[in-house]
Length: 267
Image 1 (cartoon, rainbow, N blue to C red):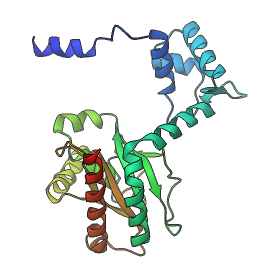
Image 2 (cartoon, rainbow, N blue to C red):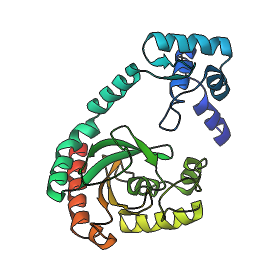
Image 3 (cartoon, rainbow, N blue to C red):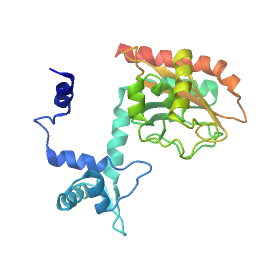
């Protein structure tokens, strides 16, 4: 089979596919931290679903509590979506196995610690143990941040091939709001990722926002060539300089990552 034929075969819908369900999932996937509500016409435009079909899909999801309608006619995710997401996170073996090592790291370091995975061009926070002294944006479990600016995101991006990296960041706006030291272009980011691959850890020095720094390392499962996730320690720049992140904090972080990796490989 030729490469292009193989690619087409991989993209072919499964014979078990339920089109109505697929359309409902397409609608739910429209919402994220930057898109919190949409009008029905916007849903049609973004999914390509005809208006009558979109109306029925939205009505069905609304009846089940997965969508809710606002007084101005806007449509947003309902409580049922939150319950599903919460159950998924609680049931994740990665989250469960990481909980105790991360809690020990937070207590030992006295700093905020996080566990995240790469979802498109974003880092999804799966676990977060926060030091109340750290002043950040409203980041919590389930939050996402641009991978190009975060220590966990850059670490996970560093393991992608050039083609994968270009595809992942195809729609990323390097001119969007970020910290003062954020990469301003894909070429600049590539240079930083090359350093990360070589040293095996990632630093974030006021790239997410002014006043914030973090250091991140990978967590590996059975596949030792590609991280299953990343963990980091996040600090206030007023209390830790970059050199301190490369010292005892990085040592503790690596030990925790090794513990979690061993647990993942043993399951």
